[in-house]
Image (cartoon, rainbow, N blue to C red; front, side, top):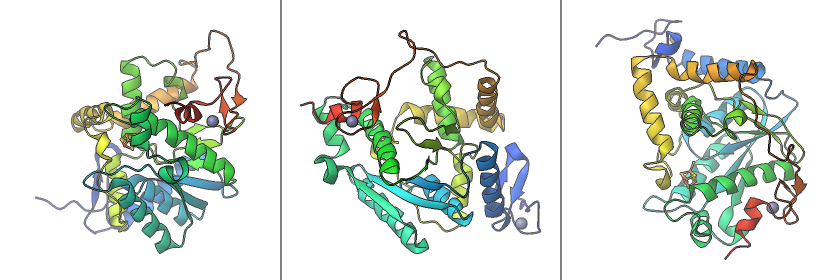
Length: 310
Ligand code: Q46
Ligand code: ZN
Ligand code: ZN
C-alpha cells in the first residue's frame, strides 16, 4: 500500500478526507481541525470570547473533542455531565462519567455533574418503565430529561450558551429521518444555532460540519481517553440505520453528506422552508409551576409531568 503524505509537510498523513481533497499528518490535522472549528463559530455567529459556554459532555469522542478545542481556543467553557443511571454489563453511565472527570482533571477544567437518580430518586430507565413510555427503549424519556436538564443547568449556573457536539453524521441522519416521515415541526428547527428565547439559553453545535470519522481522528491524535462504547440502548436504533445507509452512499459519492446538510441550510436561508404555525397562531409559553422552565401546556412541563405520573 502506498503511504499517503501530508499536504502541508513530508510526514505520513493520519487522515485523508476525500470530500475536502485533503490529507494531513498528526501535527497538521489537529491544527486544521481547531482552525475549522473557529471558522464555523464565527460563520454561524455562535459565541465570542465574552460568553460563558456550558459544554454538554457524554464521555464520548465528540463531546470531549469539542471541550478540548474550545479550551485550546481560549474560550471560557465548563462541562456538564448528566448521569442517566444506565448500566448493563458495561457500567455505561458511571464509566463515561469517570472518563469526563478524568479529562476535566487533566486540564483543570470545571465539570458539573447532574446525577438523575440522586436528584430525582430514579434513574432514566426506571422513569421510562414507570411511566410506560419506554417499554422497549427509554430514549424518548431520556431525550426529554437531557434537554430539560441541560437548559435548566445552563440557566441556573449563569451560562449564556449551551454547546453540544452533534456532528455531521448526527445531523444528516436526523434530517434524513425527519424528511422520511415529513416531520414538519422538527425540520425547520434544525440549525447550527438556536437563538436564546425567554427561558431558553442559546444552543450551538460547533461540530456540525465535521464527520464522526474526523472527530474520532482528532480525539485519537490528541490522546483523549474517551469511552468507545455506545449507550446499550442505541443498538439497532433508526438513527444508526440511517447513518449506515448514508455512509455507504458517502463511499460512492464523497461529500454527499456535507452537500445534503449545507443544501438544507441554504434552502432555509433562502426561505424555501418555513416554520409551520400552530392552528391557534403563535404558541404562548408560560413558566412551569414546578421548575419555572417555559412550557406551552399551560400547566406542568413535559418533564415535570413525568414525575407526577404513576
Ligand atoms: S437517548 Fe437512548 Fe441515547 Fe438516552 S437511552 Fe441511551 S441511546 S443515551 S443518545
Ligand atoms: Zn503535516
Ligand atoms: Zn417543569
